Length: 115
Length: 112
Image (cartoon, rainbow over the protein chains, first blue to last red):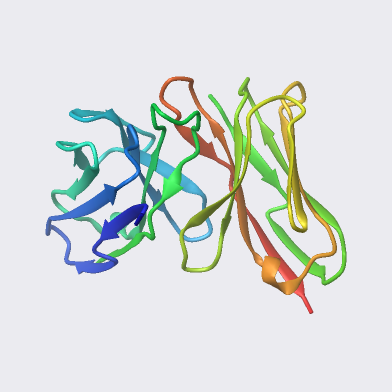
């Protein structure tokens, strides 16, 4: 059981470049989330998904897009990266119909620097 | 708007001492979570508190939930250096979506 995995682990982008972060989970979870964490701060929700084919905005969605074409994968896209998007990105998943649990499980994170 | 506040934000304590971290939230919620984060690492789940009066213990850490006071505490007993980390509490924002609102975190440093 790998849990929640994220690729890549590190990335450096130039302003205006685009990229996609991939999150995968093998726990058959219904819900998936993308967060960003800035130095000395807590986590802020970017987008989330309550099921395959559905997505919704979180607290800080501007500049990001997401897709969930398969239940186990949740992609986060940056169409035109800006220095303000330099951050550590965490993916999380939760809630299985077969387990009474709302606990979120987190991936290892992606450290993104935009120059 | 749901707000989650932790205090203290920073805590430096000697090994062997006891201390409590507080997590206050601003609206009704029946589920509260505690996580630990080591520097440069991801978040690790510590406790899930699902009802008023819930108390859970793991090693030197004990968490409790008072939904009427909208307060959770994380109590550290006889601290050791390995407990040095940042501790976050999180509250479900709305039922059915299980979105968390995180507290600001408490950075704990245990001095030998």
